Each structure stands twice: as C-alpha cells, then as structure tokens.
Image (cartoon, rainbow over all chains, first blue to last red; front, top):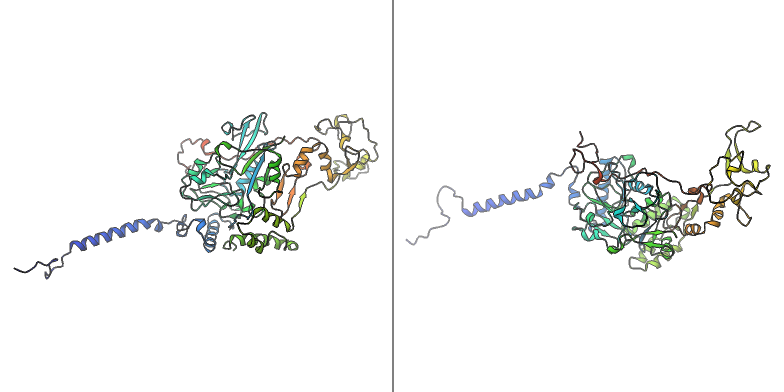
Length: 313
Length: 231
C-alpha cells in the first residue's frame, strides 16, 4: 500500500535501458559523428594542403618564430613541387619611406618589356603569360580606359596612338582593401597594398572592386620551370602563389624594400618609368611633381593612387 | 635562415650582407641597427632620410663610350694588314671638305650611311681639326666620352630631365645609401645619326582569359592548356 514505485524499477533480473541513458548515448554518438565530420577536412588533407597550412594564422598575427616556420615550410614546398631552391624573406617597410611611381607617357611606346619583366620577376604562371601590367593602346585625345586596346601586336608606336601602362596604383584609399571580407589584403606603411596569399579565400571581391583591373586570380596552380623561378622571394610578394587566390603588383617589394628599383623600371627600354621615395625632398620623384604636369588615372573615383602619369612639354 | 628575425633586424641584415661583399664599405651601408632602433616608427620621416643621407652614398655610374669610335676593316689595307682603324688614320691625311654636308655628298667612305638628324651636317658635331674628338657649337673640342655635353647643347629640356631622372634608362638602387646605379648615355638609346627612337614589335602578351575562345572546353581554369583536360 505505502510502497512507492521505484523508478527505474529495481530488482528485476534483466538490465533495462533507461530513457535517460538511451538519450545520452544517442547524443554522444551524434556529437562524435558531428565532430568527426567537422574535422574530416584535416584527415583528408592531401599533399596540396598540409595540416600546418590549414591551421596557419594571418600574417599580421604571426610571431617571428611562426614566420620562420611558415617560410621554411613554403621553401620546402617550392623545392618539392617545383624543384627550385628559393629564399623567402620577410621584407618590411623601410621607416620614412612612401613609394611613388610615375610613367612618362611621352616616352612610353608600348613595347611591353615591362610586362615581360614583371612576368619573370614575380614567378607568374608560364601557361597564361600573366603579368601585373597591362598596356592600353589609346587613341590620342582621351584618357577613357574603355577606349584602350590591350591586344595590339603591330610595330609601336602606331600613328595617332599613345600607350598607357596600367598596374596596381597602390591607392591611399584602396577599394580592394575595403572589399575584402577577411582582411587578407591591407595597406602597409610605405604605401604598398599587399595580400596574405595564405589567408585569401579567393572570393575575388577585391578584383571586382578595383577600378584599374590590377588584381589577378590564380585559376590554375602556376607552372614555372625550375630554372626560370626567381629564387629571391618575399612572403608578401613574388613567392609562388597557390591556386585559387588573388595576387597583385607589390612594387616589387622584395626588391624595393631592399633599396633596389622595381623590375619593370629596369626593363623599360625607353626610360619612361620613375620610382622613388616621395618623402625625400631631394628625390627624383619629388622633382617630377614640382616640375611636370602630373595626372591621376580615374581621379574622380577618389582612390588617391600612389601612381602617376606625366607628359613632357 | 634570416626569416625569423625581426623586420628591423631584417633590413639591417640585408644591408650587412651586401656590406660583407664590399668590405671597404662595411661601415657605411645603410642606417645601423642602433640608428634604426633610435628612430622607430614615429620619427619624422624627413629627419630620418636626412640622417640616412649622412652615411656614405653609393656612386651613380653613367655609361659612356671609352673613346673615339674605331672601324673594323672588312678587307686588307694596301699593305695587306687587317685590323681596326681610328678616325684619324684617314682624316689626319685628308683635309676636311666643309662643303660636304650629308653622307649623300660623299663618293667614298661613309657614303651610304643613314642620316636623319634635323638639318645638322657632319661637322656640326665632328671636329674638322681633330677627327678623334667632337666639337661644341662654340668651337671647343669635346672628347667622345663626354658626348652628352654635345647633345645637351640643343636638347636642353631632355638634358635637364635626364639630370633629374625623368629621362633615360636606369638600373640599380633607388636608395643610394644601399647601392649604386648605372644610367644609360644619350647614345645608348639614340643613334646620333638617326636619333629617333626606333619602332619596336611587342613580343610578349599576357593571354587574356576573357578573350580566349573556349571551343568545346568549358572547364574553368583549363582554358590555357597546361596539359590537363585536353586529352
């Protein structure tokens, strides 16, 4: 009568699975399965993506020790995949430096040596002849880039045309940087806009945001013969980029942050390119600003480029 | 091996590596580590540049001809000798004829030479008194290695732009505290007899994705060939 029913019923000989235990068990199983699914990319990592690469932090979060590890890994990967001994360095901005580039449109004849020099210097994909520079053949009398043609192959300069080389303008108000959803691209102290190729998710928003068509997407894994690879590399610059990420001109920071001139400038047979530190009052680029008629491409967009064009009188 | 060092250390190390190669300049290449540490990020950039410039600067070398041109003989001379002859070999024994103005006026030697340089004549630039030198407009002789002085007489704006690096090819370092430069001479790019810069054929073109006809291959990323997807 006063016997209270025990729950769960005890004393019975056969073990009965309680509801609570069953639910616990089911949840644990589901949880394990979900965890397994979640980490499955790690277990399926191929030679293309190592676990270390998958877990690598943003460049700006890396400590000196992390960088050493990452760079060593990338060098080893280049050796393994491309058969080339390369050195990847961490070139940082030189204090008191703001790089500015200018092109003399009176001298440029559109021969394209800069395009080729960029291709070789920056370890671009040999399959696509990729380059950070495009030269527009323009009818004299307009600066409308839409009227330009990049496929000309006749002797240059042609009658009635001028030539407008376009590459990253290293904007002070860079639309590409604003567009990036994961902050994989940013502007550094010397004015260069860089990309952490290992942080880029390949969404190409930056490519769409750039009004100068300065960004390129790696549709393919770049193919470069071992003997053509430029071994003098920098993490934020000309190291071989992985497939599926965006890349761009860095004013050859692996050269310019070591005091050298960019590859496109050295290659120019017409001497149309001028490069230097705008903060240095005695620099050649400063003289140019004080004495030449200098113009900005698509100035109305307010991108504030660090790249200028000028004419001789 | 250098990758792990701090960025500041990095810059100095690069400078020091170069200094190692040019031992006599070891103390003067770039700012020292102590200087960089003292400056930091917040320092006045102009002050930093001024300080950097107090260190020794590397030279700017201008390519120039080594001397007067010489002509390779294509056939033996009257004494049966082959070799190279200087301008004075012939011109010291042949008096200058100032009525000859263009190569087309000549009936032997230099006769077919192309010449398109405004309304200049041979002796506008060549020195009738000494064939191994050039002559300025005021009559003074100028040696061949100093040919740019001659060009600059008429091409003032170009000479001015050249001096300020807005004209002429250059290789080397923008930062002269880290390395030197080599600059082209006028006549490296402009043939003095036909100075207009020659036409060129563009030999290198990027393959534009959006311009490639895809035919039956619709796989993104494979349109340039590359050995996959076309078999």
